[in-house]
Image 1 (cartoon, one colour):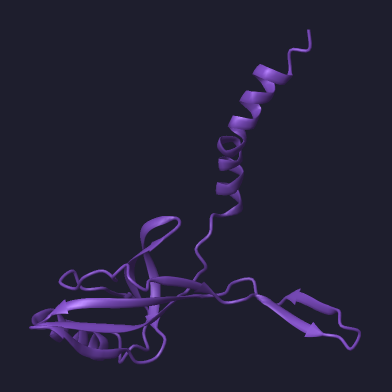
Image 2 (cartoon, helix red, strand yellow; image 1 turned 90 degrees about the vertical axis):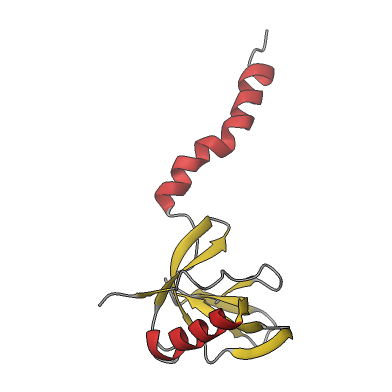
Amino acid sequence: MTLAVWPEQLPPPEQSGYAIQHVSPLQRTEMVSGRARQRKVYTSVPSMVAVQFFCTELQAQVFELFFRYGITDGADWFLCQLKTPLGLKPYECRFNGIYEGPVLTTFNKWTFSGTLEIRERQTLTSNELFDMQGVIDSEIFDITMNQKWPLA
């Protein structure tokens, strides 16, 4: 099954209020002694992104049409360009319930807001982290080799 794609006619999410919240992969049990046990129960958890879209009148019509028929009232996954610490990339996401709006903000400008669920948490893979470790540690290596290493 192919995923729907966020329509090109629609704007990307506004930066104002844009926030990513990761779902915890841990389960925590409070003990009578005051201590707690916690363990990892999920290997893959979603992230929630608070989004807001500022649309023209025509874009507002396209937004509601896409939500209702393109992604079955928000139930289906779709590809959308989102900004994360990994950069601006297409992510598989879906709406977490119905959006708020349309709210008339200025003459013929409408705002929609809601929460998107990103299927996978946005992190580097272990291979990418290993490849980057040399870049991250290069400054320490350079200082060590040029300032600390020559003992004579």
